[in-house]
Length: 237
Image 1 (cartoon, rainbow, N blue to C red):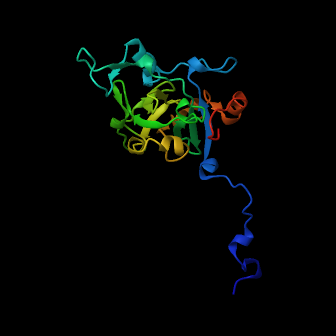
Image 2 (image 1 turned 30 degrees about the vertical axis):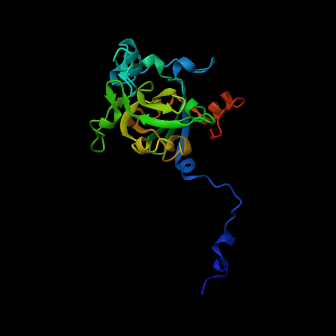
Image 3 (image 1 turned 90 degrees about the horizontal axis):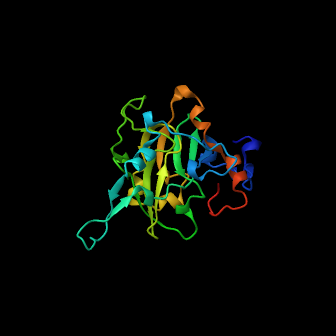
C-alpha cells in the first residue's frame, strides 16, 4: 500500500502549467559570434583569428583567390563556372552553445539569413576550399588529429533555394571534434531543429585556457539587447 502522499495519479503531483527548461537550456549556454566585418558599432568586435591554428583560414583563402567548382551546366566556352570566395555570404551570425563540460555546439543564430522566413536550405557541404571537414579524424581523450579551428575558420557552405550561398564560420577557437553528417542527407534539419539535431559542428576549446575562448563571444542577454527591436526570424534567440 502506498503512503497517502503517493496515492493518486502522478500528473496530480506535478504542475503541468509551468514552463520547464528544455534539455538544451539545462545543460547548454548560448553565446553568439558576429563576423568582424558585420559587427555593430560600439561592440567588442575587432578580433583576429590565430593563423597558427586555423583562425585565419578565411583571410588566407581570400588572399589566395580561393575558388571551387560548382555543379552547373557548362558555359559557352566549355568551361565549368567557378565560384569565388567573395561570392559567398559569410556575414551570418553563429550561435555557439556551450555545455557545462566546455564542449561547444556550433549552429546558426536565429538571425542568420539562411533561416529567414520563407527561405529554404537545400544543401550543406563541408568542403571549404582546400579543407574537407568530413576528412576530420580524431582519436583519444586529447582528440588527436583534429583539425584546428579559429573563430573565422570556415566550417561549411549552405545553399538555399534562391541560389544564395552562405559560408558558416566556426565562431570559437578549438579542435573540431565532429561535423553533423545528417545535414548532408537532410539539410532542412538546420532550419527545423538548429538547437538540436540540426547543429553544424562540435568544437572543443583548449581546456587549459579556461573560459578564454568564450570571452570573444556575445552572451545571449547582450545579443538580445543588441537586436531586440529587429528580430527577423521566428526561431527563439
